[in-house]
Amino acid sequence: MNEPVIDLTVISAVVFDTDGVVTDTARGHAAAWKHVFDAFLRGRSTPFDIRDDYLRHVDGRPRLDGIRTFLAARGIELPEGAPDDEPGAPTVHGLGLAKDRLFMEQVDKYGVAAFPATVALLHELRRRGARTAAVSASLHARKLVGSAGLTHLFDLMVDGNDAALMNLPGPPDPARYLEAARRLDLPPAKVAVVVSALPGIEAGRKGGFGLVASVTTNAVTTNAVTTGGDGAGAHVAVPDLGELGVSGRVLPLTS
Image 1 (cartoon, rainbow, N blue to C red):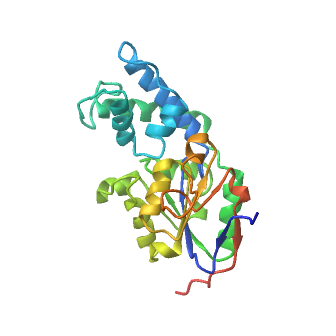
Image 2: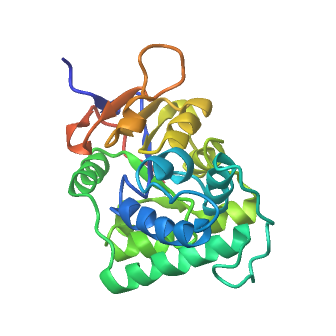
């Protein structure tokens, strides 16, 4: 079986999701969501499943979209509320603020780890002349990537603040990945995206990117990767980015 590769004779830049691909923060997000949702669901529904519910309804989506999607799956509707709601208030914004506060408390206390295989891949891509970018739904993405010591490995980032300012919808809409490609001054067909969550896979295919690579660390995502030319899944899927090779070289950028 041939090794899956990013071919730099046809791909000029690679856009990485942050959570679960660059930074090892997905477990922290899931734990924070469980704490917040379980407190809210008490007396209303069964507890939040930290694996299945997180992967199906929350992972890879902007925070408020994840709340709406999960609660809809439970047949629960909440008022939207406002950004100045009390954290934990029974509104979409209130639950989102509670989760955000809890997650960032853990980041401030324990820091952020990067996946070694991703760091190695970033170094190899840049050594060969490829450009790199990061995309995140988080308002704190720059802090998280900086805490992991990786800011210098990305040419640019599109985060939750950019999305709010530009009104960019989150995955499965490809708008945020397309904005990264636009800032790189490249057509999507010359850009690869590396994702881990189902909405990111869908966004990559909808956006017409030259390569959609998925880190398939769970059964839910594995079941959704491509099995042919139906355009629904990732082009390649690996359990670890250490198994994703790089070939070829792009020309050095000129000023």
